[in-house]
Amino acid sequence: MKPRQLIFELFGDYLRHRGGEVRLRALVAVMACFGIPDTTIRVVVARMRKEGWLAAHREGRQTVYSLTDAGWELLDERRDRIYGRAPTPWDGRWRLITYSVPETERLLRDRLRKKLTRHGFGPLSPALWLSPHDRVEPVRSAFADQPSVRLDVFHSDAGGPAADRSIAARAWDLAALDRDYEALLAAHSPALDALRKGDTEGQAALTERVSMIHDFRPIVFADPDLPLELLPDNWHGTAARAMFLEALDLSREPAHSFADDLIANT
Image (cartoon, rainbow, N blue to C red; front, side):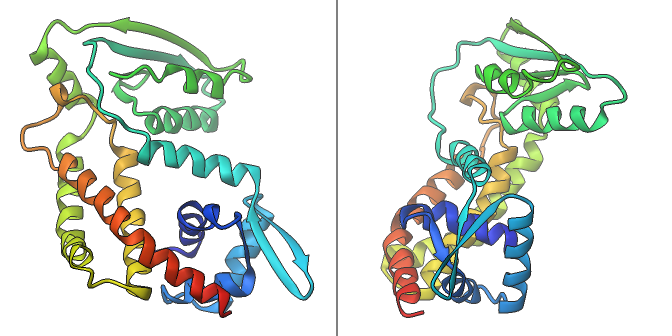
């Protein structure tokens, strides 16, 4: 696990519920549980501060770090993608976005594509993206101040269940995503069994919890959260999400209590 990503995971899952800030010495102690040395943490923290993700202030001889507004905004967006999913009936209509960005604005075009992906849109063709969900507005508002970006939005239906599933299979690599979910289940199911038995405490609870979030996050970010009607048979994503949520529930108290004690004794 990369130190930068671990810092974000700790702020998002733990520190946001503990005042949103942490002394550098305490951060070093927590990250040591993941095998990350002191010198690496100091370099990464300094870099993240320079890039505008972390802010710092002094309390006596201690340096205290917190996320900037940009950092919290990033974590809130991630949180919505991970936890904000609720199964709702599909109305059978697709939301389509076509875009036009000048060739001279390639970085802006790449940013637009990343934003579309982040909000669950998939490419049916290079400049035609679609989603079964009404998530157009976050994309549109993100580029409202970019006059060189032109977005056109349409609603449509595809003519029946077979056509809809064909579209989904072409817009997203669902087979690869299903394999990722299957691998996640294989990797973390033994840890869930141990949590159910109450056998996971202390540092093991913290490292398993953060590792679970870290492993689940990139998969769910790639998941367009399709309605059941559009998913392949024997979809592993449903079981993986259930495992993830149960593991988080069972590990919260032992993991956070261990972190509390570790920081208090630093």
